[in-house]
Amino acid sequence: MSLLIKTSDNSYNIYVDEYINKNFYSYINELNKGQKFILCYPKNLKFHISKIISNLKSFGINILSLEIRDGEENKNFSNLKNLTQALIKMNCQRDSILISIGGGTTGDIIGFLASVYMRGIKYINVPTTLLSMVDSSVGGKTAINSNDVKNIIGTFHQPCGVFISTSFLDTLNTNHIRSGLGEIIKYGFIQNPILLSLICENYDCIIQLKNKDLIKNIILESCKSKKIFVEKDVKDRNFRNILNFGHTLGHIIEIKYQAQNISHGEAILNGIYLSVKLSYKKGIMNESVYKSILDKFNLLKIEYTYKLNPSDLENIKSDKKSKNNNIRFVLLEDIGKPILVDNIELDELKEVI
Image 1 (cartoon, one colour):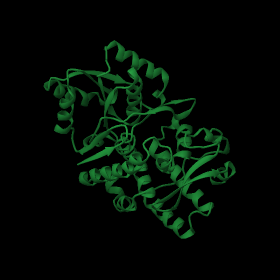
Image 2 (cartoon, rainbow, N blue to C red):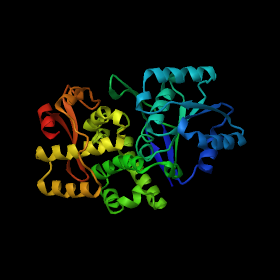
Image 3 (cartoon, rainbow, N blue to C red):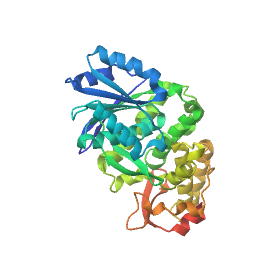
Image 4 (tube, rainbow, N blue to C red):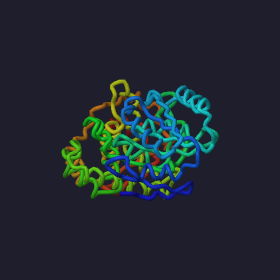
């Protein structure tokens, strides 16, 4: 399975397979002109890395490895500085290519590193979590955090290829799979009602990874949904903002409960719950649709379990989607009918939370 992403920056393919296979190795062999490839990975993936390095060396690839610290707490300038120094010590040049193997935070860090090192070098993304497969690996957003604001410093830097191997999911627990479903469910609500119905009908099967073909299909459909927004609005100026559904409050929840190890997907599901509630309270969504969505929430086990207080909303106007000091929200009229609203009042949010 493959999908072509076309942007004004560059075009690249997303490959969806069960294992890292000939598509990955053949692609790197095609890129190989004797330059350095740096395979960047977190410690927990060390077992997988040795085999990949061995296979790449068999092709005559000049491959180096760089173990990194991942996780939201390491998306910062200090870690970026350490990684930059590591590349300098490796004598990496402008033709060097980074290979990011890991979850969303690994992709964020390495993508950002690739975008600023020598004013931009190529990188390949190999996402290993369901969340990163369907979200952060597609679209070229890279970022680090600062002052307790998530992804406030970042760039748009498209990968030159994305290779999704569903076999990595076998090592993850159900909480990680649930986290990935948060973004997939979002696509269902804003753009793909058929995908949403598929998840509702097969929720337990998906969570338990019982059907690999179904998983691959859901991943590909999710990437197709994101492709629509990325290709129309690569720099996230307007239309792509719709992908922020559930994220404005979801990011605040994620930061607040970071010490409790809340996953990104679970935070977004809480944010989706609040966004639907706000849509109904503002009269954008009628009661019939609201009740129908609540039924789907029950099927998908979506609840508002991570509570916010009014004081938690103090930094909301620093959200990247806000304009002219107004809070921009993605709300729903119906499933598949999102709208951007620029005039949300802080008091309205306080009532919802």
